[in-house]
Length: 98
Image 1 (cartoon, helix red, strand yellow):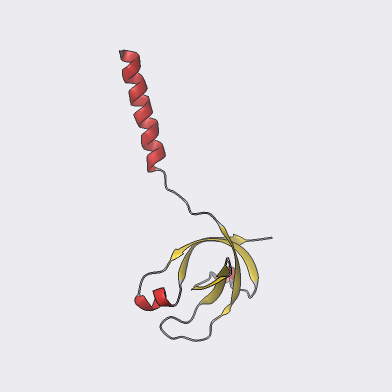
Image 2 (cartoon, helix red, strand yellow):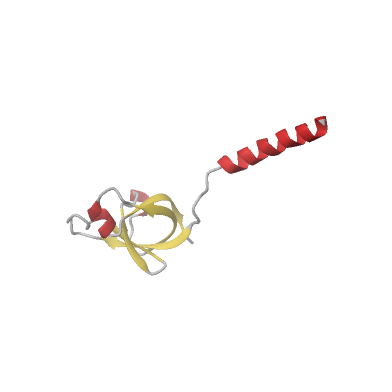
């Protein structure tokens, strides 16, 4: 009986640790296009191309070079209706692609 209880406690502890781990989105290959000079509600930022889809994003200074290949993790920016319509993303991680 003690063996079964110990096994159950161990199983629940491992399942709890695995279940609580944060799921990371997969890195995507992207190209930092060019800066968008317009400053309307859903304009501005930099054009970012992921899987042939054009997004807009604010890019860290170290990566704001035209036609720069990078790896990114991102999520949709839904902070306002105009950003949703303008296809804005928030880049959560970025690194150079060689």
